[in-house]
Length: 325
Image (tube, rainbow, N blue to C red; front, side, top):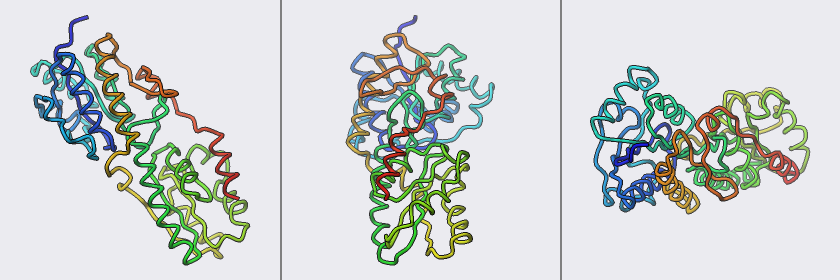
């Protein structure tokens, strides 16, 4: 295998707190090992258009505490085509890039796997608040987003109690309920409606019948934004129609979940994974995502990380049910 002399690093898809910490770690670890670094702006789009800059240590100074990504990010439909990936490969060769570190979620790693058709060493870092990638207990940005949700729900509870209302709070997660479920447990919410159970049972009816036959003067339910659940607005519309006795309100937290300074856990996780990404390339690894399982860093093939569904912990579902009485 040819010696890696220059790596490119990019962030793709939705931004997540801790991406900058990962960029910093990848850059400084590569330089430590005598490898040149190129920062690629706007994800795969920048790889096609050549928005690429030499990165030195100073480029990543004072960024570990910043949310978002200094490399910017963008969706890139062109990269989904054979022609687009061919242009990206030509740009890589023109800039002398031997290997890539891709920081992003499911779509970003799917793009990396497709790009491997050019026999390029690529290592992925799981950067997504959804925590939905198989093979890792945590993804970069998830802990910060979870803390943002808890902080918001704590504030919502104040007004819910004052007005004796039922609040449905919509959180992100796509087709994964990790943010809703763990956010509900951490904030003391009465229930969570998550996509993992959307087709197995009527979660709303169960929540109403079992969760609100009590003397609480207010209730909060977290709802995943997914198509499976219909989102908080659909759930609220149904409650108003079927259970008119409730005074219902909806809060959609939206993109505030993506922002903010990353938590200590996300900074540490991103830093560890960035170091591991460069070490993986030096070991000859390719087409793998860096994951963490039981606090140990692992290599997860892209095919598993992308294709396999990450299961919800049934113990957490039971815990929420027990604690909401």
